[in-house]
Amino acid sequence: MKKQTKQIASLAGLALMFAAFDALIYCTVTRRYINSTSPEMQAKSIEVSRYLPFDPDSEIVKADAPQKLSGDIPVIDGAAALLPVYSAFVHAVYPPESVQFDGENYTPESAMQYTNTRGAYQALADGTVDIVLCAKPSAEQKAYAEAQGRALIYEPVAREAFVFLVNKDNPVDSLTAEQIRAIYAGDIKSWSEVGGRHIPIDAVQRNAGSGSQTSMLGFMGDTPMYRNPLGFFGSAIGYSFRYYAEGIVRNGGVKMLAVNGVSPDPEHIADGSYPVTGDVLAVYDAHNDNPNIPVLLDFMRSETGQRIIAESGYSPLNASAS
Amino acid sequence: MKDKTFDKLLAAVLILGCVSVIALLVYTELLRRDVSVISYIANGR
Image (cartoon, rainbow over all chains, first blue to last red; front, side):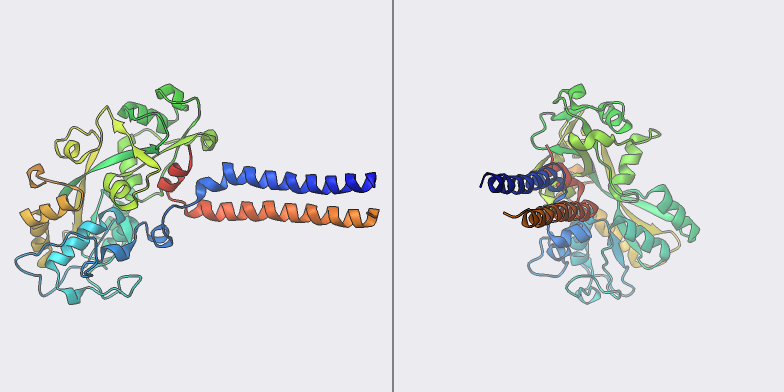
């Protein structure tokens, strides 16, 4: 009897040990990798079906231009963060029959496409789209376009803040630009060095070629970026564009940091006091003689176009439009 | 409980335990590939 009790206790103890080990892995590692967004957003960075240009339930800003484009309709593409904006432009100036969506993707014949920053710059270089709305391209994307014989023209159509994100429970609310550079250079490794807790900083990065990664490389200048391998056990910092984080993903588990004491609010972007802003660019090939490209650009910078930008949650070129 | 039975049960618990750890690690790796930066930050501390 005594032996049997010992045997059962051994088996139960072993099973409990495995259960505890699994729980430890789940709580410390697995849980951090669970996406809070839908499968569609995980696959495409945005729920495309929420921002269809001609769907009555679409969440885009609906404004109409005095005249729709006709003739050779330029194919437009762009970044995930800018899909609500360029979909609103398409709603305003494109004929509805020029856009086809099959329920998951825009069809190859559609004058509106969505392939995100990397796909959009590739398609522009390959000549399958006429104009893209994105942040600045990476050096590789520029070189690829040049190798394809493209001479890209960059026309600013809006302003947007580049923001730094931390967990909402992180006590740090503001960093200087120099502190952020030092964190991403690996010179500052603990949150305690910038007024936070005594835990490592996990300076996470984005995929190469994404708009936010290219912007971050521009922010860092010549300083190489470093990620502390022990940072995983600490608290993370990341970056994105303001509206993507605040208006599209809407994850209440993160907060945006003030930079140099200035929060990335629309008014601070518009008045230039938030220090890390960039242009939203309409990019096209100088050799493209589609007569509707200048018409579309004029509309983007018109009063109605800038109102679309402001009402979509971005900062217009002229702050008075907001 | 006979020693033979105990050995079989012990082996079964060991195998099941190892399988659960491996399955959890594979699941974690699959999640890691697709996690967004924003979710990753929000899930942390």
